[in-house]
Length: 296
Image (cartoon, rainbow, N blue to C red):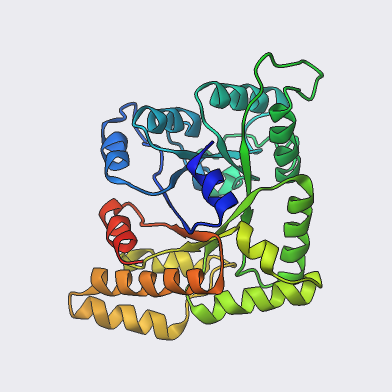
């Protein structure tokens, strides 16, 4: 059983992180970063932002070789169901258990604009497909001699402006069999609490079950050069007071320390509110994740 599944079932607080596959035919740097990371599980992206990298499957296998637990992100953008099933069966054969089922960013926003998207199925269909493979079956009726053992997750956008629609999507994913959620980053305790309140309002039920399934994103703002990009994303809201706090810290030469302190505040809030865990995105600074982990 994967550590992620075990912690979800035992309600132990989860800390996940992320390492992007390399834009290289060498795994040397990727392996070095992986060795430093002691997260419960490490997300491996599937051409995030439609940017060309090594495949997420290859990088996930490399994590397994380093005795690290991957969360293999799989999008429906690039492969039809034949290709998706093939990669998922391969993942299962290499002992990969954690899957994050995603739609995938359009190639139009990436660096390979000649690429044609597939989108034969939806991310909800992908959740169902993973669970079908767990039964030793394929969409075409072919039986697997050895089934997969996937723990299947879905994406969550708690900063979405239309939270009624987001809650509806979330419930459809739960109905499809989603076993955990990982969210895009939130930047204040107030925003986290608002999401819980809005979930209860729009779902008509207690948030208790949702909390136990959800791992909330935390993005330490240790590099303000990315701020224009973050502010352009429709589902991220960075409070002005946080911008000012980080700007002052940068002028004092203490940006990294302040970004770490803010991330720790958020992880503590996520834990206190009762979520399953936090997904800390260190933007390439693996040591920062480790420093945060030691203090939460």
